[in-house]
Amino acid sequence: MSGSDFLQLRPADAPAKGLTAWLADGLRSAVAAKRLAPGERLPPTRVLAAELEVSRGVVVDAYQRLIDEGLAQARTGAGTTIVAHPHVRDAPSDRRRALDTLRLPLPPADGIDLDLSPGIPDLSAFPRTAWLRAERAVLDEITAADLGYGDPGGTPRLRAELAGWLARTRGVRAEPDDVIVVNGVAQALALLAQTIPARRIAVEDPGSRGARDQLAHWGVRPEPVPVDDEGLVVEALTQEAAVITPAHQFPTGVVLSPARRRALLTWATAGGLIIEDDYDAEHRYDRPPVAALQGSAPDHVAYAGSVSKSLAPGMRLGWLIAPRRLQPALLTAKHDSDLGNPALPQLVLARLLATGDYERHLRTVRARQRRRRDALLAGLRTHLPRARVIGVAAGLHLLIMLDGDEPDTVTAQRAAAAGVLVHPLSWHRMTPGPPGLILGYAANPPDRLTEAARRLGAVTGR
Image (cartoon, rainbow, N blue to C red; front, side, top):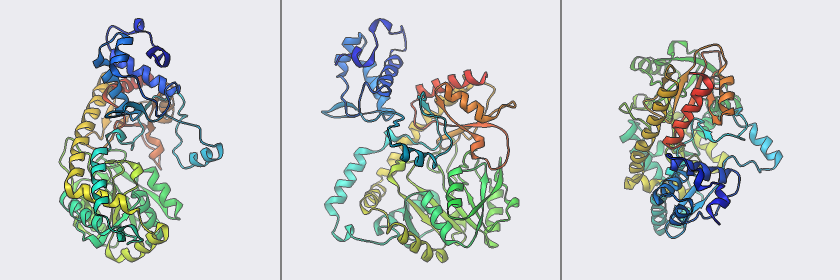
């Protein structure tokens, strides 16, 4: 197959500068149009470079961009192959309709080539080599008993490693027996909703729509409590429990202030339950880490976290550390739900924690995400110079506050028409408030984020 066959590019059309971006765009278009199928091997870099009359370095960099975006993978001896088409829509119609009911009301994916949805990590950064090395080591030492029905709360090795790692990095106070391994924060909320007596639970406003939907599904009424520049407005609490993201509030990025932390802990010791979602705590750039609330009041805080943003959502691995009085009911609910998480991934994660490979991976990812955040910020300063940008010190997204009377849903629709998918802030509100756009930056390389900022500037007229 020649370069012109699948790229539909001619060397004469190559711009005088920006050759890498030109070629990367051509490769993406070929994937989107299915001229390149999953599993198909790309031409050797020297061959394509000669055919397109560009340097081999241009082709190498363009291939790397596809790898960074999760569209291709490179393996020694196997070359670079396509792994997926973006925005595949070939599922049966009944299944598609069922899945659509579970999602936010996103614009159609057709025509979207820059997905800035929040909460999507850099899946191309998954530590494949370290995971494979750890999995081989686990398989060498695993016993028959490890593969049987085990503790529904998780394997002893992972619970022990998590207890130690969370104590060192987040200030959590817990013994291994206090840890319940779950499928993510969503399951932690589901188990709590099924077991705690509270039927009214405070949620941050704006806040996670997914958390609200999870609680409502289990018959709990989520009630909005406002968030300001210091975090949750504690004096507005009238409920028996509250779900909060104190380390990096979603979606504003605010860190719960020391005064609010003290007020919230006082509220909890008087009879309330704090449900602490340690959202994005591991992704920080311009500020030191803030200790988890759980360490200050373990008898009044149910602490939840996961590897969804640090490894991948598809791992379905997380943890719940609840006050001991709640643990028997939570373990029963976990057992009744799924008998416990798969053993092998738990043991692999335990080994990554024990060897330090997980922490090394986090350091690598932080540096990579900082570069992506900086690229988006620079692009916004250039193309939306008057925009107020907040929540940039940590996490995988930032928030732009908008001026004027136009609803943010309309602005998001115009961005989608320009090929950029963003979340309007109003999707994550329960009560009216100022318009804004939530921009996730983890899943796109710097040059694509710069282009996204340019398009957003064009559609907002800023």
